[in-house]
Image (cartoon, rainbow, N blue to C red; front, side, top):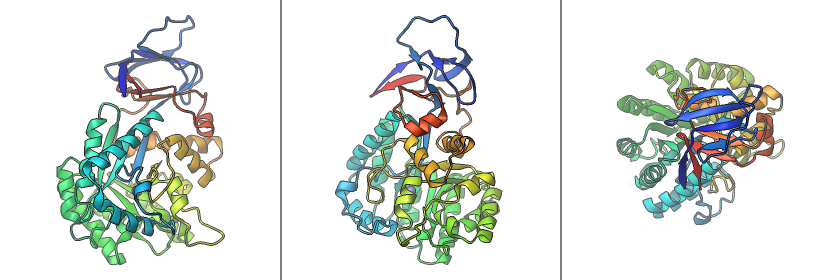
Length: 409
Ligand SMILES: [Zn+2]
């Protein structure tokens, strides 16, 4: 993969604006956005011609598992298709993984994401008694290898639980010291509701110890009895961690009866919790205990948005025992999202685009994300003239720009 510095993008179409623009780029930043002059300018190596195509800030994949990517062939078949069987199969297989084998598969997935215009990833890396720190070493090596091309946040993720895996907390601590950024969790996976609550308390203890944000897998089940996210919200408020906590999946919320769901959505909003839905994986793993009608598995995306909750959408998995599909294309994720939650009106399609751009940037606490002067020149150029067409056609980008450099594979 190579980098070529650019000084501007011509003939760019921008979201929410009429006409075409020329975007000036200097030292990795956008320095100007002006109406496109009518007189043509001579071609040069440092100029990108968007040719009337849509220019967006680079996509952000807020939920991914790089240590799992492309492991489908090396893990036995998930016959039930459930989350629980996937966790069990992966638990066995990961004993054989080396840091270098993880790094290789992770780099392959990162390259895929970049090729489709992703500029930042939040990755959850499996740490615990079985995984040890080998998977973490592999993912951190992949991040280092690809650091000029993409930003990666790493979440320490106790895949096998925290209370039911005695070694998890120590491994999480060590992984944070190795350079990981965010405390992860899997609250619904403990043996009892009491243990789930204890896990959440431990996650906050670690978050306080490292002054870190939290991103917790939570209520990733159809069972209406899984009620972890309300405790996560309550603890977020108690600890003063508002705005610093992300709840990933939150599937069970869709199975709560409406009165309780409304209460929980209010709590999530009050706690300033960011929510990530993973449409492909939720459609695939959830509803497995249903006959017909089958639930869709996603959280209540529209209701959360209506309550003012910051909702993002992630890829989650690329060809692994949890999900045999996934390409690293965030436009495909948005395409699945609009289908899964009936986001078909123009403003809803725009909202789906927000789920893979500006909303995850808020969860990442980025203040220089966008297409305005001053923003980082992390951009993707698409050969379509609207957000609707981008999600409908899901084209490959004509240019991917990172820190003011055009990337080519
Ligand atoms: Zn996940």
